[in-house]
Image (cartoon, rainbow over all chains, first blue to last red; front, side, top):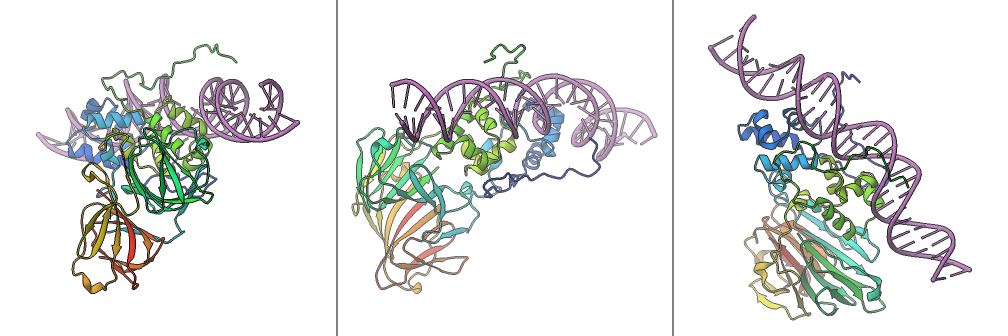
Length: 207
Length: 207
DNA sequence: AGATAATATTTCCTATTGGCTAATTTGTTG
DNA sequence: CAACAAATTAGCCAATAGGAAATATTATCT
């Protein structure tokens, strides 16, 4: 199929939630080229160091192909760059001097089967913390069969109601409004409301 | 079930190049599955959020294929995770499975000239966040002459009262109970209570 | 309990794209 | 312009991404 017009960068938005943001703010090829050139490497030399073919490198740098994850690893390995560095925005993670105000009740809703989250910030990818307010519906311990468990650390403050924090290695801890907890999120954890009313907690997760 | 497929090629992640690279210490699929499940998402939901097919997600999670970089981007975008986080080795600064409970009003007092802080955790050196509750006494803008300014990011939630957040580059923002703010702490900032009563805020600082 | 329905996940097949070798074009110097 | 080096493109094969059927898992009824 011979085209004479330059390839249109297709930006396909899938159906369903219209929440999808564009998927190419990050010019990987351009940055890789900069890195290679800053190392004074030719495509051939980079090829030898990474184990990828010259042509492949060329196409990646010109953004004609999207490298496989293993290819990215080989690149990072061969050129002595760590992957996180590749994807960090040019400067600080969060743009300097930025702020996000969230008025009461106007966070982004994010319901799950067991909790009702309200995200209190946006552009989470660039931030170190994820703050949200969560409504914990009254329920019993039996309602969950598996711990919540993920990277990072969590801080939570009870705003309203009474609940218990179940954790993997300890006895359940009853908590009332004003109590707070700081814990390692790799430890299994789950919240259970103890009263008939829902409980309300502030939750901050740090990576 | 027709298991006996003739010439079914074995699916291997390492392509046939067979070069030196021992690149696959990082269980990407496993981590992605954990992330998806921690969000209580089904493959179908994740598919809608990311624009990737169910089957593709499944194969990625089972490490049967090496996702294209655009696929990784769609994943990160749709699931609200940032890419560096994906590739960082799971390090644990905080002792695994530890927790600190702070009952209401029993935090460590830490008064300053302008605020009255109550630290809500201990062993701060090992943690990623510093949470504290602060009472902001009624005062005027003139009471402070210099901005507070430090490394990291801050999240604050107004628990009681009315106050204004003064920041270096913006107009003062009036806030009432329930409002929250996320901002870069390098930007000069200061809180002023607007009512006769003291205001109470929750404050979390991330390094 | 079992049977059945509903949903979640995996498998199979096809179309598309990444990746390698080899050839072509482009750029630089003598 | 020749001669060389570097980068890009063409052709081919293998791997990935998508779609739908098959399987596994969970929920709902009698």
